Image (cartoon, rainbow, N blue to C red):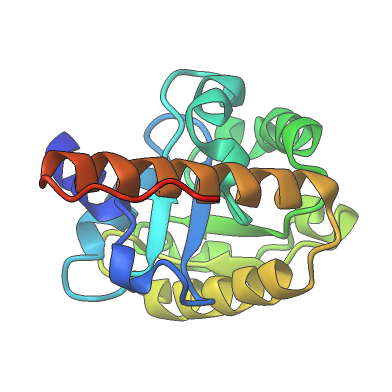
Length: 197
C-alpha cells in the first residue's frame, strides 16, 4: 500500500498547471480512518488530482516537515466511537495553525457506519473554530465523495485567492524543483539546453 500511496501523490506533469491540483493533509490520531480514504479512493471517490498527505508519527510536525507545508487544505479526522480522538483535535489543530495559519480546514466525523446516532450529536469544536463538519464512513463510502468534492472546491478557491506569503514562497519552490527535474530529465535523455543569454 505504501507504494500505491506514493504513486497516488505524484504530480502528473501534464496536469501540473491545472488550477485544480490540490494537496490535502489528513490530520488526526492513529486508527481514525485517514488511510481508509486512500483505499476507498480506488473507485474514484478521491479525484486523481487530489493528493492526500498523511503525516507519519504521533505528531503533526513529523508530516508537516515532509509534505504538509504544501497542503492547501486540511481534514481534521476523528473517530465518532473514540472520544479521545475528538479531544485530541485541539492539539492537531493548534499545530496545523502553527505551520499553516491560513489554509481552510474541514472537520470529519468518521466511522458513522458503526453508530449512525452520532450524526445527531453537536460537536462544539466545529462551532468554536467555524469549521464545516462532515459525517462520513470511509469504510462504506457514506458522504466520502461529497466530502472530497467540497474539499477540492474549497482548496481550489483558496489557491486562487490566497494572499499568504508562505503560499507564494512554496509555489516558487515547487516551480524551481520542477524546472530542475526537467533539466535533469533532458540531460538524461541526451538533450542539451542552450544556456540563457
